[in-house]
Length: 597
Ligand code: GCB
Image (cartoon, rainbow, N blue to C red):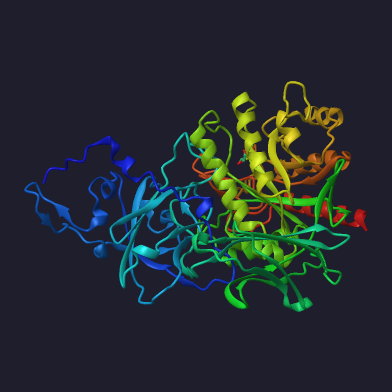
């Protein structure tokens, strides 16, 4: 057999349809059928599945006859979904590239409406085939998406997913990151059904905390056969029911005051079960549910106001990673991270540097943490490339669509430490505008770099941000504290500033010699002490977010002490050992709490 598919353009066959935020239709209250479990798996370095159309499960020989394939998906090894392949077998640890997942499932029900597949996230580019049909391609490694399968479903089905985590310059993030870009289907997969005309989107927020004015907007999908009807929003616990007619475009919005509403706060994170029903002539056609907290957010001068009161963000940065599960963290991993952050007296977590699983914001809603969520517009990005901008905007929109109703999320961040060029400015400005257009009820930020020449907090992007994030590593990458003193004294920001990163290596020495190495945990502690002293003197700083809670894997850090880990954690990678700097932050935050009382 001659492999005649040397054609470089084979991938062009699989460029559309694009699966993006526009096709995301998942909401709470839908009954999901899980497709998690064992899937057949093979790495596919040469992209054979696409070149030779393996997904057709048959092939044509040189005489034009159909012949069976010389392998079977079902004979491949099985690996778990969700999981990162890197931790399944030692030989996959550094594998980057395409890999094929396959599984069979039965679907023997009659459905009047639509059926969708939902993927929590796949790293990075993913292509889908159901029963030999190409369904589309999704880009972006950390956000959820839906794929409609209604017309392609049979009683017995084969689903094939090609997941490709190749790093590329024009992606978001691009080739160079200081974290491990794991591969695989590492969040859950499910099937869910919706009626013919269905609720596609529900956004709820508190418009005004004093008047307790709530705003609900919704839109319908499947509207080609739209016949009118009304949207009914209810909070059973408050005996509240508000309704409005749906417009001919399938959209509806209502604003109403709820005197009896208890606000969501850090010390009492009150959540309500809410329901949105779509009704026509008294018949319920669709219903979705959620659990929502109501709170308002604003800035005033240098301050951040939560329900009208100033809040200082006692933060810490967190990567989505655990030693055992990599990026496919479990609810238990998240609970453990929260309890460490709580122990350090934090009220705020920066979810670096990409969207984490939705379990984080759900748990933060329940536990009363504030969150900074961001997209991986990290360091150097192909800022001049229109395709890259489309990708970044889509990841941002998918994230906001997923988490709009989470009270804990207070900041959308559009990037981290990007070099100040005109292309970067235009790119990031567009992202800030996109975030605002999707959600004007939250604050927009970015982790900016300091103007190291003029020693000022100054970034052209600031005018498009509500909160200025400022990463600095004085004492570590630049040992000269004097510079930080000058920067903090000379800057006159008219917005709240959050020190969105600072820190130093904290190597846990096992030697008894007593020699302090550069980057020891003792040196880390001293750096933290000096940093904290300066923060205390600077009134416009409204939050501090040390880098980072736990040591974590990164192929970038190959030093003799780092050994494949970023060791700036306040706690070791196995989460068992607190370094001395942990107490510095804990004590500082305790003082902040006492001052606030
Ligand atoms: C930074 C980056 C973060 C790195 C950190 C470091 O400024 O934002 O992703 O991991 O520094 O350790 O250098």
